[in-house]
Length: 377
Image 1 (cartoon, rainbow, N blue to C red):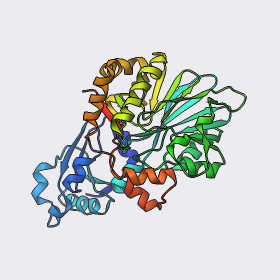
Image 2: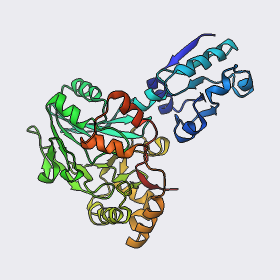
Image 3: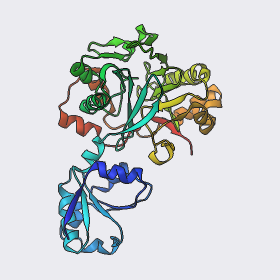
Image 4: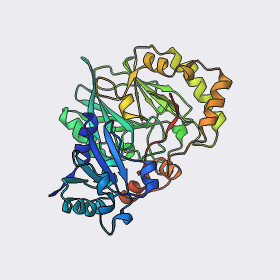
């Protein structure tokens, strides 16, 4: 039997199509338990590579013969060797090209919304749970919360016959490196961020803007100050139809306010945001967050991560109806959950205080996102 390589794109297609796949993950148990490839119809076996150095005989009775098999490791080297051993035992098997590193970095583009004025695309970083967006209007493009893979947005804009002219970050991200500054440098676009987030490089402070307009089509992007996840978190209200909510509102939860070690203070800000600002927004507005927690439950029938604000209010009724004291107590309890790995260094890089080469950025970003304060049961 031959050993094939399977790309992150191909695995993503299997996730989207809800296909069956048996994954043999040969990373350490702690790494597997912390973060793995997730699919509704995926099955798993985790056996560390070092336990298979003498051969795969010890696991052959646990490997199905009637399912597609994928071997996964951190960078692909160990998975190739294990896949070859399984192949020698007569199994048809693949390995993940580039390992979990490639899974962490893969983006795919989904159509979100279109009318006479705008087209909106969502970029799903399925291995990290990160979401970013492109809004196109009459040959110009706005990028919301870009990842560091800047060529993805440049190529997507080119496919739409558009030039990237505006870039916004809803806050200083804690679980991944922002591509906002680099994308602005490459495209000469205007880059916007809240001054209160403390970035030390040049940008356009969102405090100075009630709305951002471009081209002769009036594309209203209203910066809604929504502190809580971070003091300078904002959401972007586009044409009163779409709310790019950053890490303030998720489909199944709210942004965690404990990453600055001011849990109660920031939780109080989050409460004010939910009850004084979000409450004023209509139920039929489509909420498009910067992260998701569970791909299968948060992806809607239209094929993107998002929902109407009315549905989110219903799904998370407790969070939207709690008293202030009950809300603060619940947030404090959830604040004990595991924080994003390396979040302090990532924030420093996004602030411009520290620098990191590509290899270091890859290392820092490995793992799941943990930006939600809590989700519905």
